[in-house]
Image (cartoon, rainbow, N blue to C red):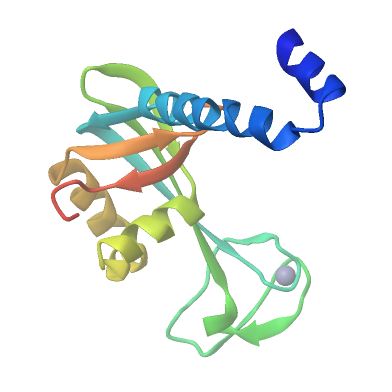
Length: 156
Ligand SMILES: [Zn+2]
């Protein structure tokens, strides 16, 4: 590091000194990603579905989807039932691995799009069954221990 700084300060050939360390940085990043991903079957799973009002972002306990409109009990705005957002969060434990998994809605959405099983988001019971019975899955973690990406190696 000190040598690098010295070169940058004394010569104008900064492009040469910058170009050398770059590939090293890329390699280190790749190693970290590999270390923080796990290929595992799920041992158990909890799927929580929350309906969220688009107007006030509060959760809505009960919505009759057969009804084309609903009244949000928090903001008291009446809206189209189709406008409600569905948030699905998964807590799970892997077989042979102590690390607990939390999978957020956006990660799950990207995953079902990738394996072309979007219909699973409409049926949390089927989603739980699918994830329990079709492993192993590859879970990629971000720096904070949350799942940032999920893959199904058999489908890819
Ligand atoms: Zn509302």
